[in-house]
Length: 85
Image 1 (cartoon, helix red, strand yellow):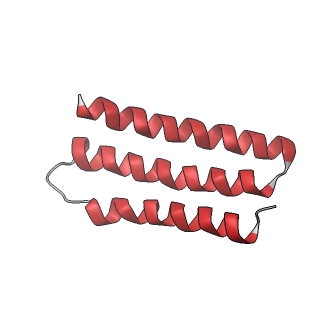
Image 2 (tube, rainbow, N blue to C red; image 1 turned 90 degrees about the vertical axis):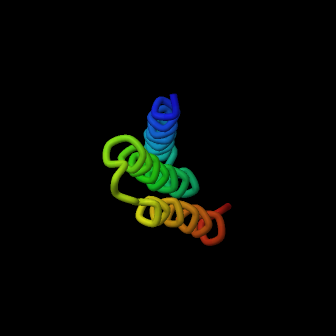
């Protein structure tokens, strides 16, 4: 059951990323770009969580999978601080 939740979280983050990039390509608002980049990093983090918990449970990827999540927050903060309207 937990595996299904991990996969659904990764799929949801990927869908949000795709929708935000599509909205950015139509409107050109920079905050949409930074939000999409944030969700791209979160998608990577969630995919690494799936790999860590389900595919290769013997290897601990906890630090490696938290780095994309940290990058997502840094990207979002950068977009909000320097490119927000």
